[in-house]
Image 1 (cartoon, rainbow, N blue to C red):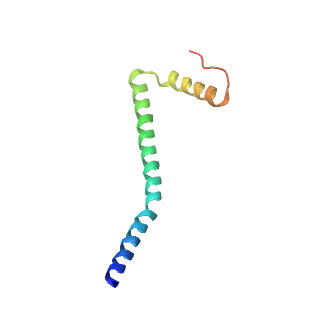
Image 2: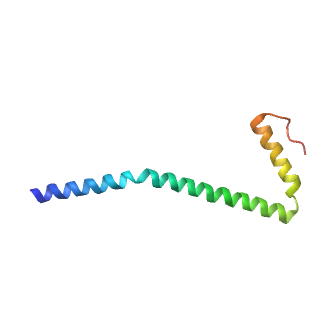
Image 3: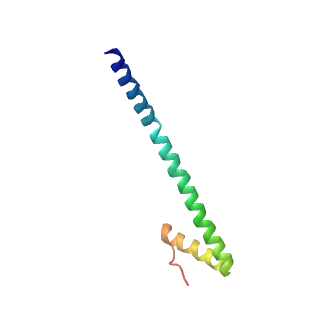
Length: 78
């Protein structure tokens, strides 16, 4: 009887232990994935801009679009 209760206590403590570390692990996983994919997207954009020679015009167009998107300034001009 005591052995069975001890095993239940151990199982519960293991489950609670895993649950306690579930959220920070998931949060850090999301942060790491966000930085990884965001950094990859920026790197692809910069490399493609250099390859095609669009780095100046595309960055100014990007900032114009973002300012229009977030602040409602003048719409971006081609």
